[in-house]
Image (cartoon, rainbow over all chains, first blue to last red; front, top):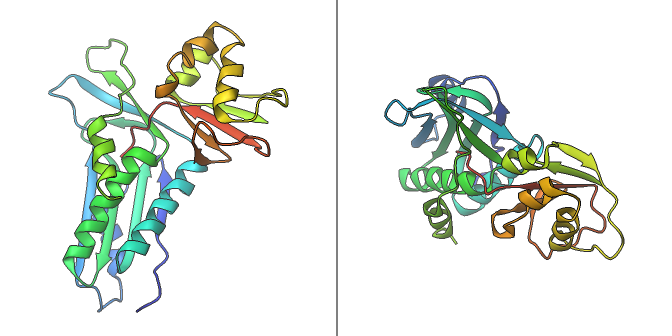
Length: 155
Length: 83
């Protein structure tokens, strides 16, 4: 089997360009058969939400995403992996998170991308606070038991 | 050791981080939560429901019974909501 690729993990305030990231991952490659790209967006909750403030734990966020990426590389024969997670103020409609998994076969790329998102949600140290469109004080977003269940099914 | 607080744990305590020196008998994450809770109303409010508190020791997730003896940095926060 080919050597394990080094995942590209970034935690940043700036936006990212999914097309550019896909191109970087596949540049000069002829062996990749499947690329699954997931983009998480800030939704406006039917007009109620103006933006999210994403707090994170610098240092641990990068380390934890890298640990989850290593688990994905252990479980599936991936040929490339890019994970970007933003922090700071993110307006409704903007991108929050990107996962790109490259593999020879689509089943591996799909499974790895879904696993990564399920695990990022429950293990990466980020917290969302809502800023409401009507100016009222927003709340911290509560963790959903659905997210725990989604992560649990990979055990 | 350095204590770090995030999200509503930070807001309730009123600090993002501080230097703490718990006594030797405070040996686990759970015991440190109990010790911190006695430091004031903000701490008591932050740690009122331990089931909603997550901890990390030196930037790795840590269970309530994890030892804290050699830790340089310990963080407390609510369940994560990234992604």
